[in-house]
Image (tube, rainbow, N blue to C red; front, side):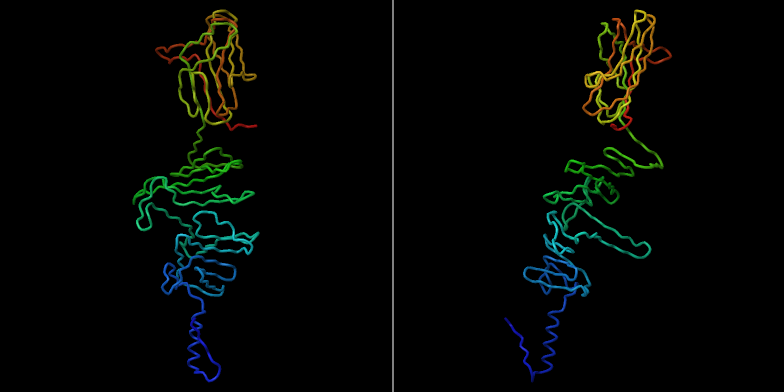
Amino acid sequence: MNKIIVKRGGGNPFFIFFILIVLTALILPVSASQFGLGSRTNQLGIKNYYINQSFITVANGSDIFVFRSGDQMTGTLNITGTTSQLTINRNAAALGPSTILGTALRINCADGETCRMGITSYGTGATNSYSCRNARGTSSSPTASQTGDLLGQFDAYGRSNSSWTLTPRAMLKIFTSEVYNDTQQGAYISLYTTKKGTVVPSESMRIDDGQTSVIGNLSVNGNFAVTGNFSAKRPYGMYSSNQTQTMVSANTPYVVSFNNVEDDYEIIKSDNSNFTVLQPGDYLIEVSAIFTVDTPNAKVELWLQKNGANVLRSNTIMTLPSSSTEIPLAVPFIVDLNTTDKIRIMIATNNGGAQMLYVTNTSYSPETPSIIMTMSKISEITP
């Protein structure tokens, strides 16, 4: 080890002054403008960088440098290396979790403290901004972003009884909506949330091309004002039959057949008689049928079945006072349906041979279906 020895008395004052200058240069803090942190040539190669309340510690292997809070640093601070990390620790008891993969900046707050990242700007047109950039390829050879690339996100983690969550539970994500070039650079924003009782987040809202889509239910507590067009598309359907349907036997239930789909959305018809919905909710079902009988004072009935069972208090009975008379019967229902439920319309008569009658078109009017049914979702399922 090289040593510098200063003897007392009789020393050369110029030599002593020179020694003091050298020692001062060795112990004074290094300014940030001296950091070119990827090189070891007369500079510091920093691996870990810690900021505590009163001082900054820069550590590289066994080398440790301390900068007090009163010291001023100017220039650019570059921290390089694939595992480099800047840590600001305001909690003397713990450093906090480090399990989030790829963390480059860690801020650990004191117990009970509200931590903030503050940005202040001045002057007309000055903007405070948090900016994310993403490209395909590599840093030395970047390529254009493609459709669906994630440009940036803000996310939040929590903690269970045993550990911190390894993935976020709520996120704001920004995606590209097309292949990027110099003239088209579309993007959209998605909000992800995690449903109660689960641990996997899913998309709950998207803002794209000036449109906001809510994935799931929308609940408004208070006033709701719309300026411009408003579209709230709910499941609906209209079905009919161009067949005459005969109840051959008396006091026997028959399943009504609908062989035509006039229009529908998120309602599925199967076997021309069973209907299921893709959205759970309360549904308004309206049925209109034309009945005729051969015997005066014969009765016809119409009701609703859900999952093969009769719906309570859904039956309607009508008496036809004379034979060969066509009389329409219109019946409304409101029923709550889940996506696994099936509904169908049932008919019966006390006189075999009664019919739901189809009438073909005339020269001036369209055909008359034997039965028409409409379905529409009117609300979410209520208790």
